[in-house]
Length: 115
Image (cartoon, rainbow, N blue to C red; front, side):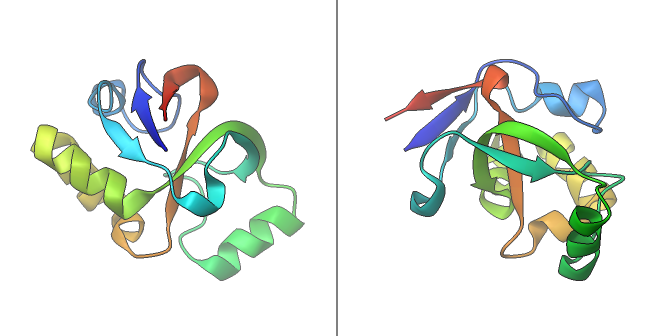
């Protein structure tokens, strides 16, 4: 399954950077191939590694997000093809999202499923 970003997703990135996602089609990994509710954090204010992420959960510093999880590295590679400027913002401000095993969750309101 894939998702298409249809409106500006919510988040901490600047509005112009979030607008660059609109129209992109991003694959959803098979292990999470349906809409779910996840515990999320901000891309700027959230944890940068797994230990910090665990602490954020244990300390209640997360919020529920219903949407679709995608591999951030894949999503950012797709973004770079359509908007190098936006991808460079992510590279400069949140380089940890280019690492394998990291993920974004796009809210259900900002995307649509493509079977």
